[in-house]
Image 1: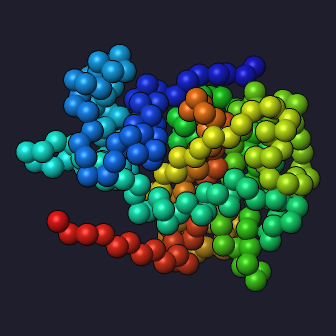
Image 2: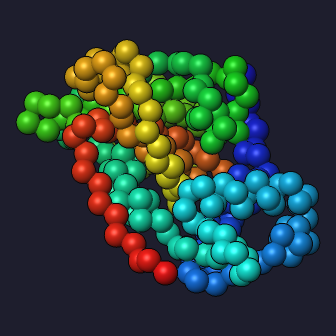
Length: 242
């Protein structure tokens, strides 16, 4: 049985505000509408609006300035730096990419993925896991999760590498269109299976880029968890001091 549950209201509101930042409706350096204005504009409760704004502040899209309100920062630098990873994961051709498909299985949905897909905690999803390699060394582990409704009528459950990208395959088979992605970057310790595939010793963390691919309505179609060994990454961020 497939479950189709919308993402929480505060997440959908945050995604809407984020898109307005990216399309220039809310330019960097300007104030976002007040909480009262957002409540009236979107017909949502104040707690929902507050949670959405807190999420955007946490991820670097907005900031609070004393005596001035909530200011648009623009697209966060860390998102710009990791954007290539998300795009590569979304458009990778498994049959030609350097690496190998290591697992295809129906699994319980991880909590972070369940939230992004709007699924209950006990739901099952299909996972395709690909280990990308360069010169024989593992450089990233990509676990992509699909809700049951998206898998039907496709070859996503096949244990053979897909020809062309997953995105192209799904768009052709399901007549849907990928419109935009949201990326969330965090750090964590890998589980034992992830550490073994990436060749990591105990205690070495990974960077996780959670790539949420959505249609034009904001409905998540798939979620990819891109794991990068933290000891093999070099991130640089330049920003202004005001």
